Amino acid sequence: MSRGHQRRLLPAYLATGAGGAPLPTTLDTLTALRASGLPLAAYHTPVHHRVVELVTDGSLTAVEIAAYLGLPASVGLMLAEQLVSDGLLKASVPVPDALAPSRAGRPSMQLMEEVLSGLQSLRVA
Amino acid sequence: MTSPSEPAIVLGAMTVVMAVVALLLALSRRKQMRRCREMDAALKSAEARTRSAESRTDDAEAREDRFRAEVSHLVSARLPALKLNLISSHHPVPGLLHEKKAGPEDAELLDSVLTKVSEMVLTERRRVDAAARAALRGASQDSQALSYRLQSELDALQREFTGSRQLTHRMLAADHLNEQNLRLIQRTAIVCGAWPGHVRKDTYVAELVTGASSRLRGFDRIKINSRIASNVGIVGRAAEPVAVACAELMANALEHSRDDLAVDVSLIQTGNGNVSITVDDAGKGMTAEAAARGVRLVSADSKDVMLTELGDPPSQGFVAIGRLVADYGFHVSVDNPSPYGGVRAVVTIPPNLLASIDEEAEPPSAMAPQPPVAPKAERRPPAATETPAADDEKSRASAPDSADGLPQRRRRGPAGSTGGLTVPSYRAPDPERSRKAWSEFQDGLESGRTGSDSEETQ
Image 1 (cartoon, chains in turn red, yellow):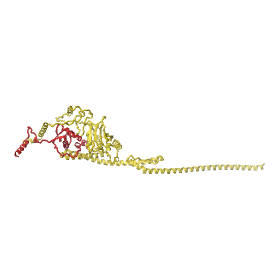
Image 2 (cartoon, chains in turn purple, orange):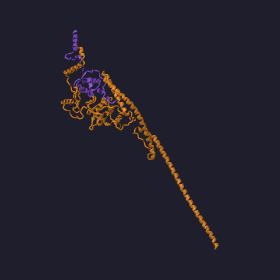
Image 3 (cartoon, chains in turn blue, orange):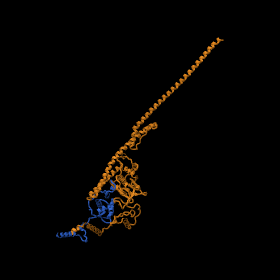
Image 4 (spheres, helix red, strand yellow):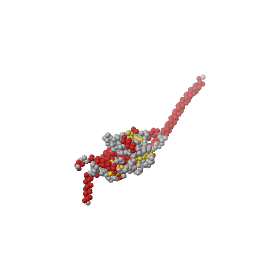
């Protein structure tokens, strides 16, 4: 145990609490999260409070939240899933690239092509 | 005239002779009388001597009987009692059979047997105990070192893999098991005379107590309320010992209260500068005897408690605390009742073991509870309308944007500036705003990602 190297004091499981069975994997690392405005319950840990505080004025992804709190990304995702299932956070799936408007403010070429092919297949049917 | 004088002369001569004879006789008789008296006296004294010799023999016999009785009493009653007394001082050792009749030398001799025996037993017991402690200490320290390595491995694993939630969950569970194991091993090592195993840097009190709680099964029953200024920390050398003491007290509280009851831990700084960590449980409380024993063990003079005195099952927690208290100079009290009728244990840390930590250089972890209200703010918060503005002003002043223009993370204002935590308010969804935010995000993502992609497509 050399000097300078510090033993960890606060393990990551303090953040999630000693919950029962794990929730199913529902969130992606890039899922954006924002607070739903519901109040937190007594069983929420201080970290849950901090997460809700962080996303109250905007949205962040689970990975960003984890980085802000100095937690492993996996634990950030777990926290987010717990809070989403408690209704405290709202998750929005990231918009696929194709749906985003291009720089000119118009839909991208790929999207237009997909719409066109859809229309054509409709007409054929 | 010669003839009448002849018989007179003869008579005179005879008279003289007779007188002489009578004198001689008288002399010899006196001599004899004297001898007789002397013989009488010698006889008397001889008789007296015989009598006194006889009585002395009787005395000696009586004394021998008494001594024999005392020795057999020593063997059959006093030594067995001493054996029990050496195990627990509750057992009395009886005195001599005939306390008053025994001579002081005998009493001393017999008592010295007891003293010698108990000295020998105690010396031997200390030697055996020291050997047992050394063996146990060596084994626990090795095991402790391995557990720390496992801790590092598990921590690295948690940071490396984000795959399935099932995996994360199990890694966290394994981590918690390892922490519990570490606590038990570390405690045993300390009881056997080892040091806590590592030195921390100066650590926030709230973080230290939270970290200590994480070493216990059922840590989410522990509710920590910090009412201490958030920059108060414990100096590095005392940090781990205080954590160990807190963990042991919280473990007792969890163990002795029902599974659905919380254990309240509160942190306060008292007027004389001490920091008090109070652990209240709602258990049954301790008996007066248990409390007295606890007080004795956690005090600084319990340093040489032996393994044989720990009882079965061994109560290692208090002994470990006692050793740490003796070595590091904080104070622990366990003999007060809690407000719920259980036990209130208080760890008091004197100002010389406290440090002030720069919160900007080392921001406190999100996992430790922050003081929900400022320590002094038992008054009504300022009017609700001006609170957020004032808060913003203050936090902006205390955390200016950094030199490269990146905004710094906003910290909660210094303790005392606000009435407390701002409750997250409900925000109506604003489709325009989200669209704008997302498109900006998307733009940024795209511009970063598609330096080459866009060239390919065009």
